[in-house]
Length: 228
Image (cartoon, rainbow, N blue to C red; front, side):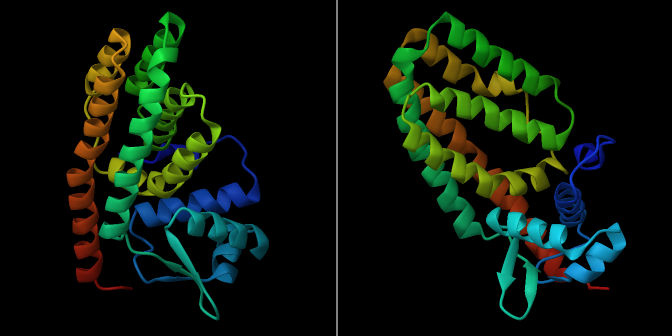
């Protein structure tokens, strides 16, 4: 599955171009766990100054794909299984709370928008855009709880998992979003906050085994492949 969103023809800022270039390289395995990223070399290859590349390093570091180390610069981070499991546990708890609080606020207009977001998700072929659309669905749903601090916490967790989800989508495609989210929408239609929380948590937690298996296999492949 090509990461076409990382190479669209629309103009990007230099920082965005550097970020997308590095993310694509990590997804394709050209940069692997432990590899050092040299800003000067990357900037030269992209025909830009070092500053946008260093800004891209900061963004990748915030997303957990790069570690910034004193005197070593940026180093590609491994996908840590324990960290990823913890993030999904936090997502399950926080989004479960959010949907429980949101359920009384979900009426016909909100249901229509949620359904449309899922339709858009199923129509999306590009992995990067799919990840963004998936996030939009969950963030809109959680926003209906009307708890801004809670939403900010949930949003921060997505910043940690999205790059890894993108790596996963590069090799695998989930089933129909409408089918996977149908029990959530059914609970919302029924106005059952307890059921909505349960099915949403089950939905989030059901992702963990497959994603962790992918991460573990990716790590094994990285360790077994010789570096050029």
